[in-house]
Image 1 (cartoon, rainbow, N blue to C red):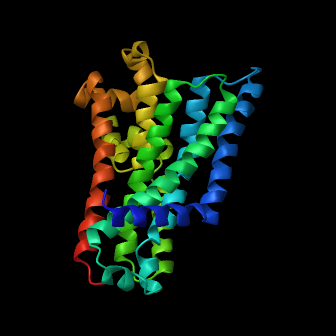
Image 2: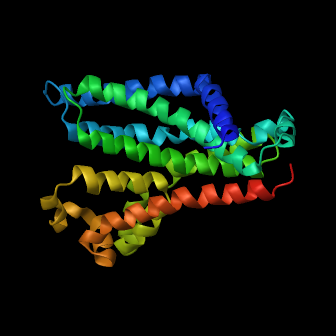
Length: 276
């Protein structure tokens, strides 16, 4: 990696780590992961939660809050530099826009990944007696979700006129994906009024829901459950009808890959061509 890119990565990494927003969410994520499973376990009369309880609780409670880490920090990455008139100074140096974008993205992404790993990983290690490979998959999905929303945040940062506008748009997108496009409510409406197949576009339109479904079909459901039509549920049956039972996970993995690449590539192209 060129030294100039590494210097930008290091700067963005340590600047992000010093962010009160990132520190606060690291602590909140830790207590969400460590608190919910114990509450559920004790409510059921168990001594400690199982891995399935931990995965399910993390997916349903923690994942919707993860975009609130990437969106506010990433949305200020470009437009914040413009507001402070430091972007012009940076680009006046012998460094390309490609290096600036890559350095900023990887630096902020690395800082958020470190926060997620500490918040979710340490809490999970405290709960579990030994590390479970399945929970490493949960962490990986959290990283993928972060990449999606960080790419979206960079896109917002590039097209916004000022920092406050970027933050407002970023919070709107979090509200859109975490609250408005909610499968619990929309699936009921779609099931009653239309064919369950129409739930598939709702899933694809929401990266949070895509990650939830990957967790459901890759980690929570066993191969025996995957072969049971009743266990698949209406959404699973609809996806199996279109893609086949073995094609559900490839379809979901393809969907989350597109969600990662589309905003990152779009924001990269716009940044390269924008007039700073």
